[in-house]
Length: 477
Ligand code: LFR
Picture (cartoon, helix red, strand yellow):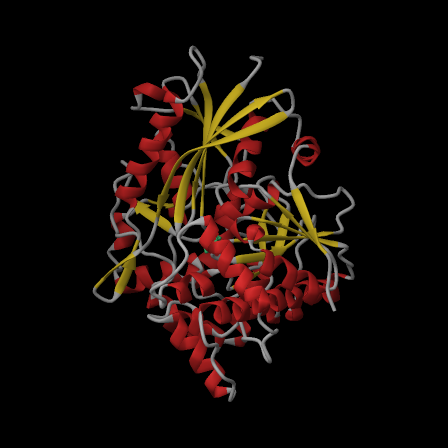
């Protein structure tokens, strides 16, 4: 085994993408951010699409730069890809795209969402089969709409590859579905590690589009058609970014930590050997997504910093540097606590043309006054998200009998003092924030385990926890 192992994490989020080089040596992981680029979906007519060509171009640029950054004579041992959940590419046998790749915020699923919501028996049946609630972005609803709208697609497409699967295919030439990302689709059998045939039938989806998912750690072969990366292994890491972020949590082995991966979305949940199912779990919208090894990550999806990202677009003077961000957070901290908080479950926050306008509309409906300035909105949003996080925690505690002792937070929001403090105060337990690119770290962890440089995830977490910067927020009265 060489002294230093170099691996690259391709980590694609809905608002930005990264290529991160990991160097593993003496039980320590060092990260170098090689390439970061913005990502966004674009509207054409009434629909929203991802620009996969640009994303692939940025990935290639990042990988080339990663190789160029290696010490002389060193090789990139492996590469892994994680992406946001639910979105997918429909391809033919040669891997050619045969349908445009829609973005999950596209409103095309709204009729299907309502239809299912109004069919109580089907709703309960699908939740019992998949452990995933009825949410507007589910791949099940997206695929249902595509097939219903364009029946010829069942002849044109031969495979459905979720986005990390598709990038793995571009890199390795191999088409596989990976379990963690497949579990975000609402099409995987919650009691097995394969597709739910009854659910595929319900949404009228061709079963031949899907293959039995591989577990994280599967080697897909060497990188193809990319001379700089000749010899580099493509490893199927947990394809879902949130699964990677959860893997990276330096959690205590006693299972008493609640996790938040905080970014565009706040994913509040925990790890479990069993799913959390039943009427109450469905009402609380608990998503039993899967860990790369097949176990469960019951979690609730809270609207997250999308609220703030959207609101910032409505202000001309928005922060662009770390300093300006710090000034905004300080100004927001100094304000009095808002008289009332936002209902963060309001569906009008999903994809509005003006976030500020829908926040104001919600407040107006409740006869509350809108904040005066950006600091006011920032305070209102962070406090409201804090309460949303705490509500999710209490629902988990009620349903599982667990009592969480700490909340661990990674991702962009872990740097936001206001959000961390609001969460601690609303939850009544300490929040520990880690200075950690959780998604990239989890991605790299999976590669290192597959390369046998690290024994398992517990060992990885132990080493990670030893060297990581953290800050604890205690609840305030
Ligand atoms: C976070 C995330 C969430 C998923 C949402 C939509 O990036 O992957 O886990 O619910 O995006 O795919």
